[in-house]
Image (cartoon, rainbow, N blue to C red; front, top):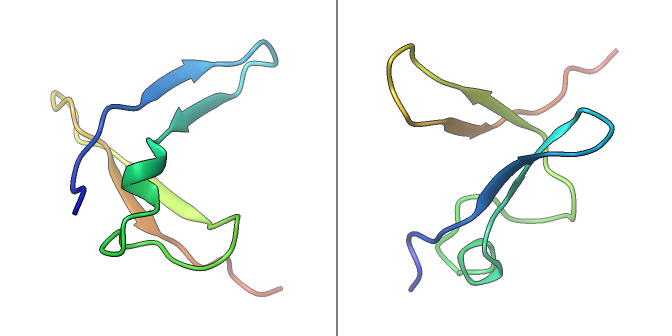
Length: 62
């Protein structure tokens, strides 16, 4: 079981930021996000903290 790994946060040339997760972490059977290739997430942080919170976020229907 892989419950942590080292990834990357970087800025692309078009100004967007991407977070890469190690394959072993994302494909672990206990990884909380399952299903399709694309999953909508909500990312948040607290001021003064060096942690990001990533939560599954279903898009609102229009």
